[in-house]
Image (cartoon, rainbow, N blue to C red; front, side):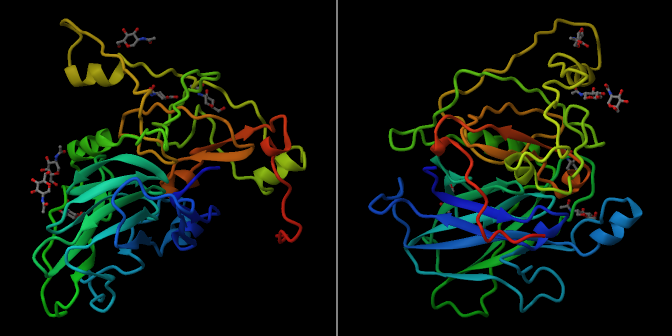
Length: 377
Ligand SMILES: *[C@@H]1O[C@H](CO)[C@@H](O)[C@H](O)[C@H]1NC(C)=O
Ligand SMILES: *[C@@H]1O[C@H](CO)[C@@H](O)[C@H](O)[C@H]1NC(C)=O
Ligand SMILES: *[C@@H]1O[C@H](CO)[C@@H](O)[C@H](O)[C@H]1NC(C)=O
Ligand SMILES: *[C@@H]1O[C@H](CO)[C@@H](O)[C@H](O)[C@H]1NC(C)=O
Ligand SMILES: *[C@@H]1O[C@H](CO)[C@@H](O)[C@H](O)[C@H]1NC(C)=O
Ligand SMILES: *[C@@H]1O[C@H](CO)[C@@H](O)[C@H](O)[C@H]1NC(C)=O
């Protein structure tokens, strides 16, 4: 309801979402302008991932090897072998401003994305307007979308747009760089594009600084509507590699959860998900002790102060390695909603659960029946 912006649709059975996906772009209501300078043109940039060995790895019970390459709009770009013809190129006119709708559809990697010589102005994340800010590089997690404005105000030439993973834990990632080209109109294809400087794959500071700059626009037209009263607390410890939430590993049912809920089919799911993990998160405990390396000394413990005015509102959040994230949401959409890790590797291992949002009082607050022509499996 009331949504507009860039969203991502994708399959959620096994690893089908590696290729079964696309962009949903909801334009503002007629007569409504963007709350930023109207762009001259719009381009969708979908960052993807090529994975060929999942089935083989699954059979062996192993994680699949890292991706063979990332892609921009399905193309890996000229830095990767056997790909000279497979490069996405976008033509721009000098002096004009463009809106890039960037989607991370890669299965397992948060990505840094930058364009050589050009800053970007972030204006929207996950279909929610942000307070605009200018940055050289963005960070985008799988499932997230980011809209940026980019102005073709540099010497007319060809410039690489490039992406590479952010990974600050000691696990292997495909750290090769995928590229596309920002091409000023009239410049011949023979001009060698310049390359942007991307942060090192383990550059946590850039990642944290970027995420800290995200703020909801929070104007009368686009209010942040942060829930101030919390009715139900839920605490999760998703830090274990065994992939569970509150010590429950999700088992994929044979019947759709929404179907089971709507038709009251018994035995598909239980609603006794524990609100708390068996071992509580100790904010003053393990990580601090490890960092200080001593039990002596004067220790103060800093408690989080939440931004309840204009926090970023989004449907996917990148949780820092070994860290935590607090989220609030209003249960205002009846149905069954998956909450899961968006690194497909972890989803596969059971790092997921679902919320049942019961119907409200009126038909408008109730789930609608499945369409008559819903295909049967
Ligand atoms: C990009 O932004 C930085 C920091 O605001 C600024 O120093 C730099 O000149 C800008 N670059 C371009 C090409 O506009
Ligand atoms: C990328 O990975 C390769 C092989 O694992 C490694 O040799 C190289 O240093 C890495 N590059 C970066 C920028 O981390
Ligand atoms: C990041 O990786 C580089 C080499 O790949 C290493 O020299 C550096 O110490 C790492 N930085 C951090 C903060 O781990
Ligand atoms: C987690 O669940 C398993 C299986 O039910 C159980 O054996 C284990 O004791 C639980 N862990 C904790 C910390 O409660
Ligand atoms: C998460 O739970 C596991 C076991 O259930 C425990 O060993 C670990 O310390 C917990 N982590 C945090 C940060 O609480
Ligand atoms: C948290 O960790 C600190 C330091 O290790 C310890 O003193 C404290 O008792 C722990 N709190 C809980 C609730 O376990």
